Image (cartoon, rainbow, N blue to C red; front, top):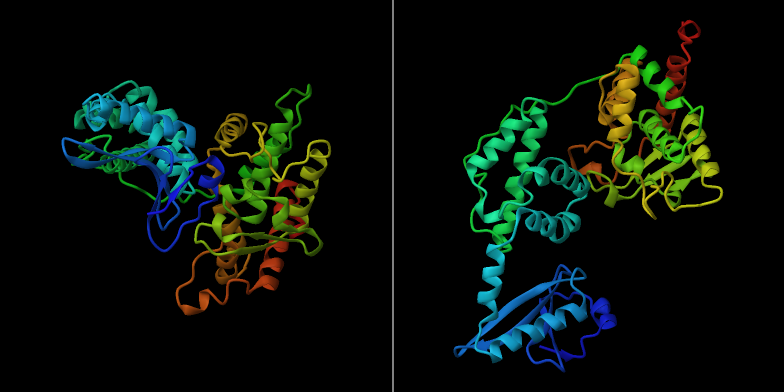
Length: 401
């Protein structure tokens, strides 16, 4: 194993290879950085205690910096010098871990690294789990505790109760592997509700009401007015393009070819992992142009920037709730995509073309080679849908006849 001077710059620069490698520090015996084939970097310390060579993990990079890891290693070696096994201290500390600690480590070390939907995990943890389990010791949470939480959620949100159960199960399974907990209290706890695929499609009258609310301007502009305009524009574009909410909200200017009226969503952002090309209708281009003018003084890499820094808007649920309250229309963000797809097929657009617009995975070997096909058909379909939508929201049904 190579011996190097473990600095912040070197740690950042080290690349993974075809096998796991441990880089040992040349100034602190036993202190090392383990780099796996997948690129994961973890700190560790090797030491001898009671005649046996032992290794103890010190955390992951970049969550734990070089300086912090080195200090942890020194503390561990100090314990060894005083005939105290640092692994025993670590085990005692783990027994005191709260559910909040488990949740935080799960988000940082697993969800944010491996899941595109980590924002949903974070939302469920903050809204449903921490208020109930937050201060409890993770190892002390029982099956009865899990059942009690699900019994509270199920009457008001049965499908959410299923999602909560699935997330808690995943968190504790991960916690077992990470040696934070020993058991999973979700074991043998049944699904609280029968999963049912949502099939909600907005009527033309409901579309009209929602659109009118999205277009409504505040009489007295407030600090959050700009954010409301951005959120409203993103929801309208979801209905116009029939694309997924997360993909629309994360749209970047670099993904747009405005000269050719085209949006290319990279594979790392799509659900199926395939690059997806979306023709932009006149209505879609109009909304994008509005966002460009809105960013005139403070440009962002994102079309729908968040007011909380250099990122994009994420959770628009509060905006949807405001629309529901103002219109009386019960809907979810994904219903916009489903509504667009349904009304397109209802207007005679072939299901195959609609499937191409939705970026659904096709069976068969041709799907990889066919990913950019049907551009002409998709463009015609989305222009047709755009005109149809404008007639709906303008109440011009007579012209349609």
